[in-house]
Length: 98
Image (cartoon, rainbow, N blue to C red; front, side, top):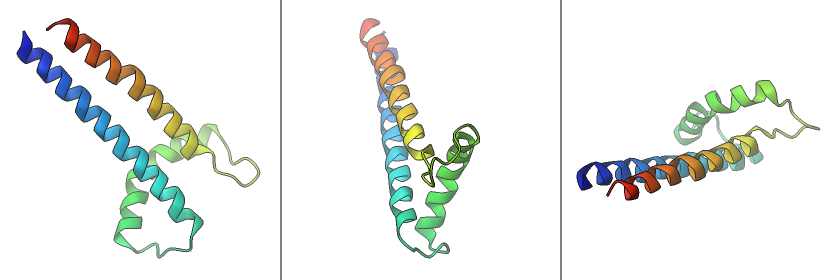
C-alpha cells in the first residue's frame, strides 16, 4: 500500500509545484504589464500565452475596477484555495492509507 501512498504524495508535490510556478508566471506578467516591454519578446509572449486563457475567463466575470485589472489577484487567490484544499487533501489521504 505504501507504493500507492508514495504515488499520491508525488502527485500532490507535482500539483503544488505546478500551482506555485503558475502563480509566479502571473506575477511576472503583472510586473511586465507595468513597464513598456517588447511584445515580440519570447519570454513575454510565453507568459501571455500561458496566463491569458485563465485571466480572460476571470475578466468576463470581474470587469476592470477604476482602470485596475483585478483578474490576476482573483486567479492567484483561487489557486491558493485549490493548493490549500486539494494538495492538503491528497497528502492527508496518502498518509492515511500508508
